[in-house]
Length: 361
Image (cartoon, rainbow, N blue to C red; front, top):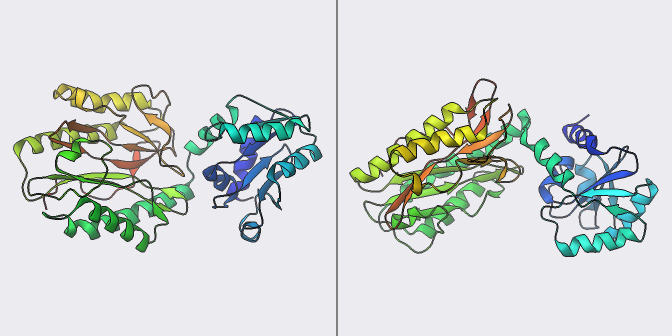
């Protein structure tokens, strides 16, 4: 039994009786349960059977790729769904609610109503999938390490370009190119490469701004490898660095390293967040740290668990999270340092191998 088949059997636990079924439509979840990594596809899971529904464009690829469920081609998705559900005597289906548009939901609902099949309105399927995906297998962790390796290689290759006179957008474009050249399927998100006063923006957008000597330069970057994401942030100095910049950088670094020391199985996410937040607050910059300390990563760049003040999830072996505290001084500069780590029984495994002492180029 392959990994996808095991995942399907696990998610079947939420099916309480034989006349219930699951419908999975989001790209990342379809990939998670089938290994089919394309923009189209719908998974149907009953107590005894599972199906991947695709149209003519993808049928050949799907048949060659998928062995966790039966691959079926459709001309009309909703007609085929109704047919399969009726053949399996299904009267109630659970669907994903996140990302399902009102239009798509209504269209599916109206189609199934004709066959007297109801759609559950709760989010039981979303919660079950999120909880299942939080715990990564060794294979998933290996794929994420490969994504991180690609990111780090690309980062090192573009460092010589970060110098006075260079534009933010050119650095961004170059690292995107390097990530793909080095084996990445693409970037994990809209990469952040910003300089000077713009580094006080937690999610600043690269533009025509030119790097100047004395600037901080922040890179929030990541790549995708076989569907899995990496996430890393580094803040570096260009030319020279002021005492104030050094002070803020060292506070953030201390907060990040201290939070990392807390990571292990059995610890609440909120406890880790508080540890980083307390260090920044005691230094007098609590109001300048307004985002969560971290988040889960996997097939999506943001997954459970959330490492935040309200993060009540207890860490378990196999969870992958980021630790990324920051201080942002409005109209001056900002610092964020981020690593992605996997939780172990005794601590954590850090995907990042790059040094975090302040780098001055």
